[in-house]
Image (cartoon, rainbow, N blue to C red):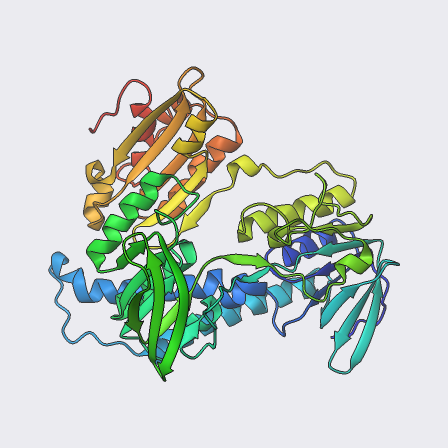
Length: 470
């Protein structure tokens, strides 16, 4: 779409969870907003080829796995369970279309002008948008960069989206691989690896470090690996992938070094590269506009998200911090409130992280390792879901709630969950972190029975007078 008037109060570059939320909040605050997006649909990586489609596939694959392996425990007999991969993928696309269309309606409701094309920032605060029919120039006193990130590549492994995939390609596979090698043991690799494991692939995770989920509490990675191994997933840790050779169509050989073997090989018919993401700033003209970046290519900004070019701001995956959609959204709200003269900030010590395997992993605050490195004297307690009535009813016995508090003040420092619906349970603990609650505050809060949330209360009790059901 081409705007009728090229002068705005704010130009947002990127319509992902950071950009579109910032655009909407700015419009609510009375700004005239244009939002430039290079793709035809709004929503960015998260809605189109990231968070939403991956969770749709995880949900469908989990139901498939339950029908094949778990329903019999409930006395429910299901014969000849089958999978329609085409319909499986169509459901994902339907959800994506509904949500991206919803953003378009929100833009219309808030009178935000969407502009399709690639943006380049000029020295004079103009933004030149290259479109299929030519170029368009927009002007505004405030420019916000929210262009997100893209998958990281590794030498010797060429992503062709036919045999060797990144996360985008894996979300649209038209076949179920017999043997899939996943390079990277972070949340993307484990989530997509879980999808294809449930659908019948033999999945092997190759991770360079000595644990999966690097950066999270070691208890989470260690125990999740044990559970996923029971589900059939294979792991090779402390390996360095050298190359992946496609011998012929769907016949791939991955060459790697490990702590035990030099130049080991593993054969497969699909490779997923999931070694992280990097800021997407191609073509923005950062250096020309005087916008500085750090050694990792992230845009440098101050506490108000303003870059080294006055009036130009940046949020989300293009700046330092965890690459999470909800972090970008919070920054999007904060930055436009700063522009409007309102005081706003983001509490980076209370940003939850979730891994949507089954069981799920969720974490907020400091890990046990970080607490000890800071020299804090901690009190730590773990309450197992095995002792929670609702978890037993659900047939989900694995996992725990691990809480870390300052031994002297009882203030909650970190919470780490492995278990059913951890993604929902972490919200209570994030709220506790936000308001600097003590473990006793959680322990004295009445939790409905029978619920999974009672495990959170029991863990808090364990930091004080003692858990009741353990």
